[in-house]
Length: 292
Image (tube, rainbow, N blue to C red; front, side, top):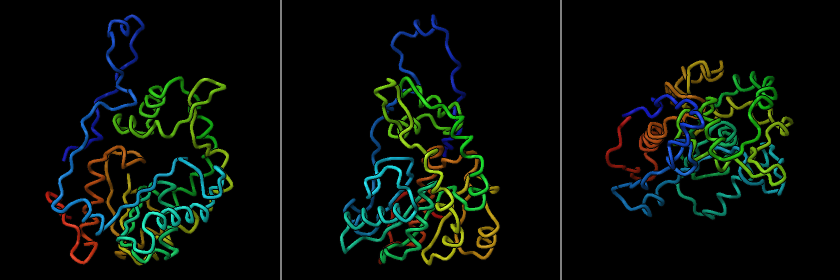
């Protein structure tokens, strides 16, 4: 499989005259990727797959509001209740087998939702590059990190360019898809700003991650941990991994946002996990799927 993290070097800044000579050539950071729709081919119809399993993915970088109507109510309890309420609305009393996938803060919510044991149809848990020990250790530096990041962007394309050149993401195409929804337009300043004001949520930070490793290990459903590097593991997870309490895959040559840096590889890993645990009475068989 081709590694989508092997990107060509970013183009250097062009001079004003050179930019004029390019005419109407679109920027590589244009916010709407010029690509055909992805065509998926399954052995069974989409409706049949939906009867077998659903993947609920959570990234949670400041999209929308909580059930309380307060953007800043980001306590782990409120966010877990929000997820459960959404699932209840979607599926009622007859939910299909569900696999929850969570990245970063979404990974914390995925673990806490699983720990509540409120989803009898929960069949699997996947968390992406979030580990209690290393995350708690980094919180002391978080306000400085947030204050040093660029706050205002004249265009969406500038925000995409900043996210890639600054190393937040390594895949230009993924950034063009994901970054626009993380921004909001400030009419007073006539510019785009970050939708999520994480610097104002410090009171919740420790609550998101304290006890996360033990909750993850204590879950009785099959579990997969995807990491961008082995240095991410803390002591609790290292012991749990040696005891075979969960599957672990280290995805090389990516940053923290594995699902964006190498989306094809990420999708294959999740599909392999779903196929391996054989959700439903006969499992979900997807043709061409690389077996674990």
